[in-house]
Image 1 (cartoon, rainbow, N blue to C red):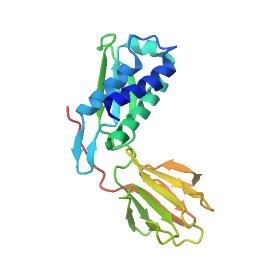
Image 2 (cartoon, rainbow, N blue to C red):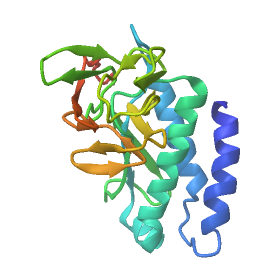
Image 3 (cartoon, rainbow, N blue to C red):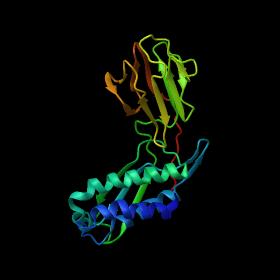
Image 4 (cartoon, one colour):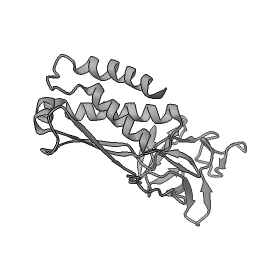
Length: 226
């Protein structure tokens, strides 16, 4: 999508939503542009591809944050979604979930934007693995990993309570998402039946009587370059 495409989308989704109530000298699209420019300068090449920071802190003058008022949380959520789309479109990788925080900083002049970024692995995993109660490991190397009783599934389940195609685990820019494929007995994560769920390290996944623990498999570690 590139920076220009990102900016066009930000203008439509963010400015369109908030233009009637936004009174600060700083427009939301300017924050988005500043974030993307910072991310582009902080790209890091790893064995897994190009990685960008996922922890983003936007410093604004207190007057500007005050004028943002009640839309701060909504704006941060919109910016997270747009950064996620940008990362997916550019095939960038992230070491964990995207987190964007807008903070007041009196050292920043009115109308200025200072973006600081860092790599935060958080609770997600860049490379995941499923581990059985017996210690058997199933690395999640594919973009889509299928699980079920079908012999064509990537991870075959022998449990009679599991379905032929029980679930899929999809690799995303932020980690892994598990999706139940309308199985008869359902998929449970940490005891709760789910239709889909963003996996975090330590999650217990159960298909019928078969259970796995989701863990990071040699999680990529990168340092922030100033």
